[in-house]
Length: 174
Image (cartoon, rainbow, N blue to C red; front, side, top):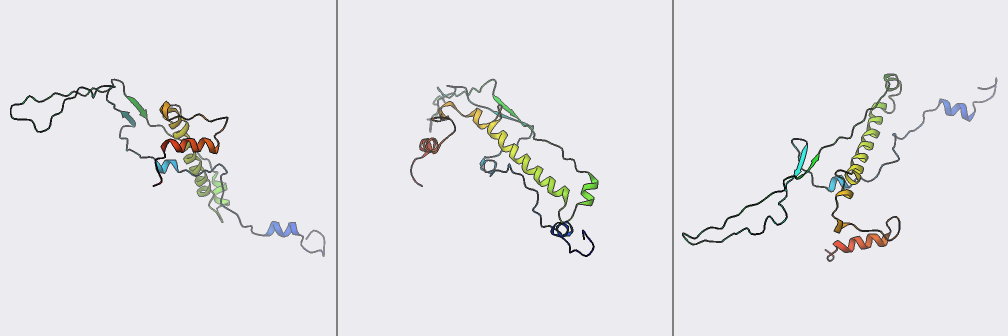
């Protein structure tokens, strides 16, 4: 009561009331569909090496089917690139700091450590997808073959640019 005999005001009542809260939300959240669509390969040593046949290495390989007795069998030799491309695993890492005083005092109705950790995990996943697309070493944008790149007509991609991209891979309605 602000004055003797006057009723409790709206602000005073608001300060005494419990409020309904949402869990902490991070505004940068995007639909992370790329990670779920890519084929993943277990990497035991932390490095993934792409062993490819040298250009023209498969030419001149002789193969025969059902050779006659005593027939000379053709020889074959497959030559690999001497310096194949290697991808070394990278990590996305951070540290979260939550004071124990905060986690003890403000654990209800939401556990502060759990909620802050949830937001941080979403941020790490977002960064992971960003790196898969944009990283200069292994990102999809930097490793696309020049024939697969499509220049936009002007500035940022437009629906017409997307139609052009779809038409390159579209064969017929499935």
